[in-house]
Image (cartoon, rainbow, N blue to C red):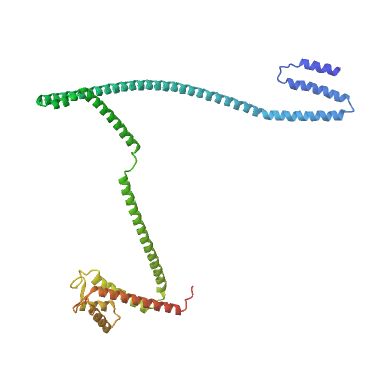
Length: 372
């Protein structure tokens, strides 16, 4: 009863509006609990341990609260800043929304004005079109009336001139203006239908090709295909020949390293002699000393053979000259330059073939040099 009265008294003294009301209230209960522990000697250690643990926990929580106080103030500042930014952004968006609404209303008014203007323009266009069509009808009716008047004047003139032929008068009188007007209306309807059909045909067949042009293009395409096939076959044949020549050239370049110097010198002299003869007598026959472009004298033919075949003896040269003179197309004084060309080609190919065979035999018989 004493402790309860003490608690009530102390709590009555403490003002609830003070900033440290909870701490003062806790201190009152702490004092009362200390007195209570002193009175119970038996449970004093356990109660003291409980009180100490509660005091430690309260101290730890107070430390945590003191640590969180700056974070709370920072959070409050951040919250206030975010609220301020949100309010400013909301004000900007509200102003922008208001401006967009006003712009939208202005655009709607402009659209309505343009629609009204378009309606007025369309009304003016319709009125002008109707006036134009009416004017066109008037002009056409006036033209038709003028043509009818001219026809009537012509009929009257012909009736006055040919009054002695009653059958002609009856025939001309049968063509009255009403019938002509009806025929004119029918002709107009037919013309309108023909124009509509023509426009429809143009719209439907504007992207089509005439049959005549199609046949021409198809024939040209077939010719081009045939030419393409021919060119492709020629190209394949030339490619195969080129590959063969390339292979032969590669083999010759490999085998040329093992040739005999005498064979190489013979081929070079033969090549230079043939090149000189061909350049002097065959490729430029106009500037040569021959009498004409296709004939050579005996002396010129003998000189050309000696230049082309420097390894042959005089007897062999004379045999070649005699064999050339014995041909039917050659005479006693002149020899055809084609004969010289044939001799050069035959002798050159035989010499080259013999040299190649000899070099291959020497390469096969000689041991391969050891590589470094």
